Image (cartoon, rainbow, N blue to C red; front, side, top):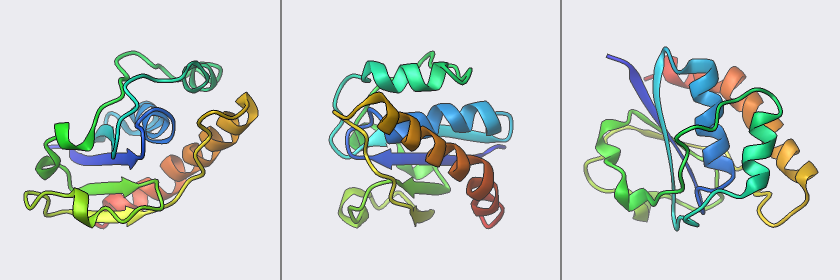
Amino acid sequence: MKKSVLFVCYGNACRSVMAEALARHYCGVTFEVASAGLDALGYIPQETIEVLEEIGISTGGLQSKDLVDIEIGRFELIVNLTSHDLASFLSTSFNGRVVNWHVRDPYMERIDSFRRTRDTIEWLITEKLPKWMEQE
C-alpha cells in the first residue's frame, strides 16, 4: 500500500495545488497525493495552471477543495504550507504527522511570484518530501 501525503494551504488554489501536481509528477508511483484548503477558493487561478504546464507538469484533475471535505484519517503526513496552526482544523481521525513548511502565497500577484512559489515547492517535493515520508 502506498504511503499518503496531504498538502494544505489557505485557499487550495495556488500552493497546495502546485504541491499536489508536482508530487504526483515526481512521486506519484510511490505516494498517494492530495491537497486541500482551510477555506477553499473554489477555483484555480490561471497563473497556477500556467506555471505548472510551462515546466511540463500535468494539471488534469486539479480542483480547489476544502479540508473538511477530505477524509484526512487516510493520510500519514500532512504538509502545512501556511503559517496557520492546523490543530483546530484536524479531526480526531488523523493519527499522522504534520510538517509545517510555510511557503509564500502568490495569489493575486504577478506571474513571476507564481513561478518562485512553484520553484520553492518543487524543491520541497524533490528534496524534503522523500525524507519526510521515510520517517513515516
